[in-house]
Image (tube, rainbow, N blue to C red):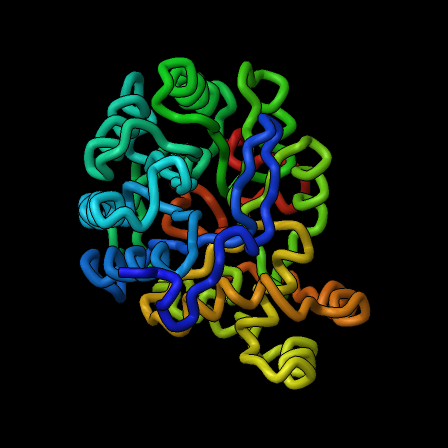
Amino acid sequence: MDIKEITGYVDPASVPKKVLYTGCEIPALGIGTFGSDKYGAQEISEAVYGAVCGGYRLIDCASVYQNEKEIGATLRKLFDDKVVTREELFITGKVWNDMHGDGEVIRSCEQSLEDLGLDYLDLYLVHWPFPNYHAPGCGGDSRNPDSRPFFADEFMAVWRQCEQLVSDGKVRHIGMSNMTIPKLELVLPQCRIQPAAIEMELHPGFQQPELFQYVQEHDIVPIGYCPLGSPSRPERDRTAEDVSDMEMPEIAEAAKAHNVHPAVICLKWAVQNGQIPIPFSVKPKQYLDNLKCVTEDPLTEEEMEKIRKADKGCRLVKGQVFLWPGAKSWKDLWDLDGHIKGWED
């Protein structure tokens, strides 16, 4: 099969790149693999195959998504079919919250490597900064009585294992996810190996400008999840107050001017703003259009400024299933007043 004959094929060389502090390049847009409790592992793995054939080189995985074995089979097929080599891909993994104990981060990474059929991961993230676990597919009111607030010493015990993974050659870079400035202020000075990237919710309706600037000032690349406002996110993450990014007037106006779908505008904005979006789709036209759009017809400075000013501060993934006994609301997870909650309990 000549992949260049695929309808919608995008030359990977034309996709913008970001540079990690090590000098390693990472594509400025990747494909996510979280099926939002709606899509099965086989369907997602088939989308990964089509996406890589279509030009994607960044794949965002996680053990909790429960599809790494299937994606591993897809990777083997991609290699066997000579569509791509391992070295041409940038693959991210994540340790889930129930594997934060002594030695468990190492075992979790080793399991992901086995499932994915890889010798190393390009980036390995701490998915959430505490060991609070919820069952896959649980409801928004689900609570684990063993949940606890963030403690820097506990987090650093996890991070030391991540650093060991780098030393052992099992991962090339390590990073964090779902962090806040107060948490970062505590842990960054203690890191022997600094985070290369941080995943955070980023979309036009939730731009997190303070955290975004802080991360960039510390030479950490921001990776944005929910870049389209996550219209397929689980019901547990939906509230009546949520803003639909693709219905924002500024997005609709730009979409009309460029004669494209509003999703395209969200992704153009993300890449031009400086983050790496990781949109999810199992539909070939959608995921190929997502990649192609960042290689052509950029937004104007005026359009970028209008979208910047349109920020609604609307967090979609609130994380309420991770609340500990005594926590008042999901806002306690995000240190909105600059103080880490839970220590006073």
